[in-house]
Length: 593
Image 1: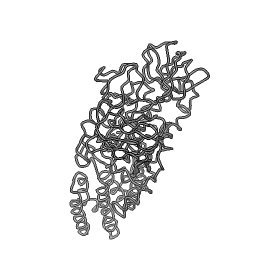
Image 2: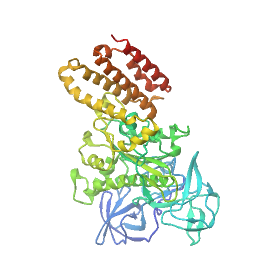
Image 3: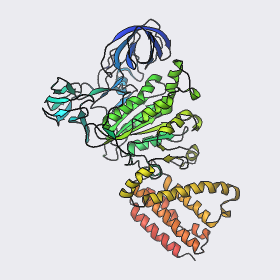
Image 4: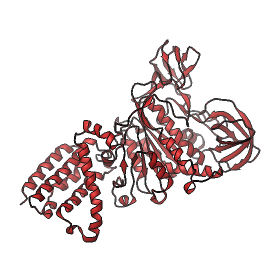
């Protein structure tokens, strides 16, 4: 993957001019330096060990730096050197299957060289600079190219084509280009003005990659989770938040989405999570099989791991590192799903740095610019027409939020709600009752529902929206009726309301519950979801007709065929079984006297 270079200039940066000064003051990861000629967000090297940091504020002759490593042991008057470069990621073949820390240092390379604990002041290139890739040129000499134009392809992993693109802001006519085996730093093409094109290039993490235009979010990201695809869908290029207390299932839900959603590329960011959780992710992901191809899921995944005991400043950068990598694959025309677990830890990192900068605190001590930072991050999602590829690409962002004590009124959750359009509220009480996924259907919502109805009507069933609306109405009615039931019991309710409770129970137990560990039920197509809903509502319709004919509700509730629907979600050949159940159901109602 590349050789470690202790104390050497970081590879993941964009070139400019360097200067040096001295440390004036230290406060944890925040270092104040004097005597350096720096710009905002320049990368600097701090102290004898050349710890990596980034300029975040300038005041007179003082430059404030957030250091991405532990500052223990450094002292005033040690040297601070600015590289004149902004923190950037190295984009090219080899990103997929990689596991990085928050500033794109490959963790397997660091572990191989120094064991389980990263030493300070070390850097390693984000891409393997020795591996040779088989580059097939698709452009030719004389072609006019501009930012985003594809000049050739590389098979990055089995079955996945990596499109080698001209970096944004570069354009001209190709003077020469050649196919063959190249490393990421080899020149594969030269423009007439002398500009060199390589397999890889750098891009600043805080600068969104340019696009031609954003497209309407009218195609769903199919997740295979019934409750999400049916009631709270997410569009490709959309944004979603998963808030929930400890133990409610945020991480499992995100891992299910990563495995089953119909995105081409997965970027998973473990931002400030507990070490044991990230260990589980890092050990399980390489073992998972991609259900689409049968190859390892890692073949189309990038993992970024920044645990809670790693430097706080690198946690703040990890989110931007992940979204920049996602944008890079989006520019190739791929659909990318980015999982950020969790943005609360990211916000806490900002709060800690802000307090050390002695900034005026906002609500609950978070910086006043918390909402702006969250909005800027989520706004980088979108389905777009790219600069140089005909197919549209997308970045869908799914951010987990970990509100203390499950309090959704706290600032991070509230500010996330303002900018995301799908809200999947996890409920600890549902998790305790072993109802998974534990998404509360009353508190959750999706603003994409109306925009996606046309797609579902065309690709699944013309009456899709009708069944979804009916089901949600019944579940909401159940919520009201349960308050009455607690006082007087269900037997005291009118027959129609007792029927509503029974249909709601069927929706909850037969439809909303889904077993992530069952071979069949772990993934459910929209077609199967529709078939299940249709059968449940057929029972509801037949029962309503029976009540109108004078049948007793207790006799209707004793019918056996409806309970057979419960097992259909575990069957692959569901269509045949549901037809048999519907036929049996019809006969049972006809036999009521």
